[in-house]
Length: 571
Image 1 (cartoon, rainbow, N blue to C red):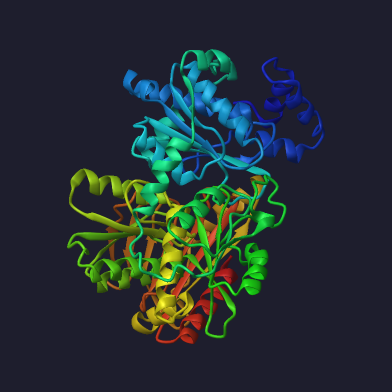
Image 2 (image 1 turned 180 degrees about the horizontal axis):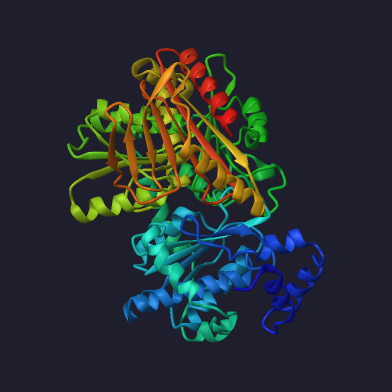
């Protein structure tokens, strides 16, 4: 196997790579650390595709790594038979640097392999891509996005015919096809004009938008709510601006104030340090407008519009950012209570959440007689469950969510959907306003009823080769040794999803974990509090998830603080 310096030299010397790429690589000559980071490995499929910094090199997002991945995907599609090639692949992109270029690169590689493509005429939300795969009966889908990553990143997510992101088994099969390509000259190419003449390269747009938007509006639960509610919305320079404003407008919400500075697509995300609605700082401009117009809620979607953040007024009238667990619990209770009130709550209803999402949702679901199913982190696993329920016809999917601001109801999309979620959050806020409550006050009512749940996510950023080693070393350390007691609470269960084993420390028995293998550790205490360690699949971070509950907010927060201090001391 070539070492990183050999790979670097081969890119400089090969006739295959263009002069612009070589010029960029000459610019890092002599910088061994940078060369190693760009060439020590090939950019790998993480959570359903590629994601990395844009630039020249095997460990970067560029037209060559995109074309190689697409050739592997093409070979996989062709291995499934001629019908899959004819059904084609839908491709969408967000507002990031190189997104349009990577979209065209992917389309033409597929076209060169005789596979039809449907390319959106401009940027679109990721969930609309998920919908369109099913709507057009396509074999697969690709979305060029790095979600909420910083501006220097881009990515490439793959979806299969069910509209969901590819899950590990299929991803591994695609990776095998990619790994079989040992030279970039094996990647097929075709001229765009020729591809269009052969009707392989097809452009789609408004006709799909109309169907998607109408289906989103059909998910509205209540029409008789206070639609005079004042909403401030920021798409954070991404894809959510047009569809969310259209849906709200067509449903009768006229007091929607858009953050002008963040309205237009901007690959530099120049008004924020981090284009992520999970970051309270992302709402700084929205807060100012909110104060000016006396808005009831502030909404923010990430660049590819699959996540949405909410800010509501607290009991003192101040704006309070809700975390993903809180918004998810509110949406779940709103949906289930509304269905129950209308006599439409099915007896086989199910809610799906991830293993690092708060258990408040499970407690709420139980109170309505709704089953809770846990999946691994990543919405693709929730999408996989919807497909399973549909095939077996045994359960009715009602709601799915994860703590990282991703929510879904309905079954025509198989990924978290910021358009659907934004609509329902506005409707929910309008409903509670008619009851004299803000969303924050409605949340407090849930806590009073079900107990106080407090969560914390602590991320440790560890970039490059050394960062990756540090993350691996930390995970192994906790596998070998971990605190048996925190905050006066005894550890009762330790689960290692990498070996798919769960250890009941009270009964001293080992149980199998039915979920797929994943590099996650979870530690549960006698009162139901827990923490989990997981390397991010999309960013160079080690994530530490913590959840505690108590009879009061102060009790739960005290447990979280002690838990966090103890865990970080062990790092």
